[in-house]
Structure formats: structure tokens, C-alpha cells
Length: 59
Image 1 (cartoon, rainbow, N blue to C red):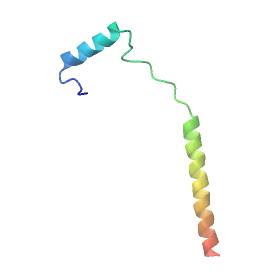
Image 2 (image 1 turned 90 degrees about the vertical axis):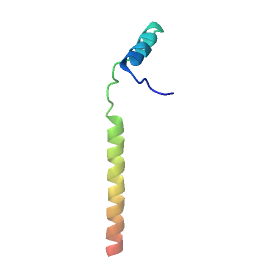
Image 3 (image 1 turned 45 degrees about the horizontal axis):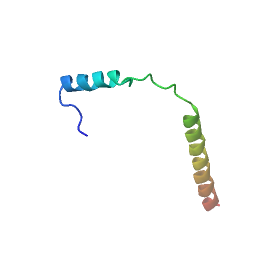
Image 4 (image 1 turned 180 degrees about the vertical axis):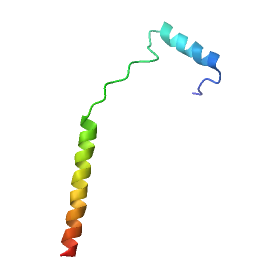
């Protein structure tokens, strides 16, 4: 599906969505810190793994 080429087409699409009961601009979801925390711990584990491999090879 191609996007609207003019502002009038876009406004018509938004008007149709509002008439159909669809909110074209829903409120943003509150950010959850769990994803960032999980990625952070994953990166820490990977770094510890690399450091331990380097130390093991250097011994």
C-alpha cells in the first residue's frame, strides 16, 4: 500500500480512521526499564566471557 502523496489525502485517511473509531494518534506507552536492564546484564556477561577467555589464553 502506497502512502498518501498530498496532505489532503493524509487528512482524508485520518478523518476516515476517526469516523471508524480508530485513534490515529494513540498515547505513547510508558517505557519499561526491564529491556534495558536485560540487555545491560547480557552485555556484562559477554564482556566477562571475553575477558576470561583472554586471561585463560594468556596464562
